[in-house]
Image 1 (tube, rainbow, N blue to C red):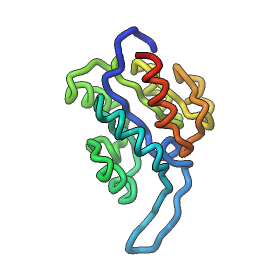
Image 2: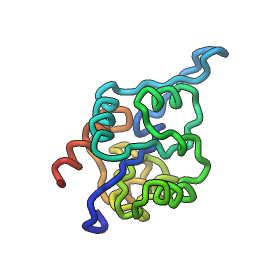
Image 3: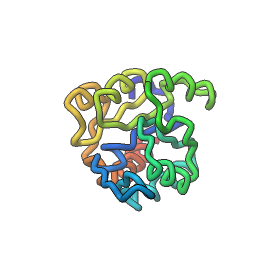
Length: 158
């Protein structure tokens, strides 16, 4: 972590982090769909019992919105255009400093967020810019139980 302040909120990108970045067209009625790990969902629910957990993602699909709804997560920052612009909004809403946020992502836009938070984590197969900017590169690839690994990492640092 950049500072010794405890993590008070976990935010995550969806495409390439909770998913392997693949999408499938399921027809006009359904739209684009993605595959999510049940074990990541369970890890998110356990973490959400201790602190706010929310998506900070450009993803605007109905599938992502439904997944976040089923996990009962605050989805106000789902479908954002600019993650850096959203970060101060999250801090104000949850009355925390950015140094208390752990953010997990995989792309160049996530690389811009990492230096602004207390703990920026890139997935193992993240874009090279994201891996270079991250405070920590996880062993898990996108869609392969990233949140489960993060949960264990945060528990170990308590």
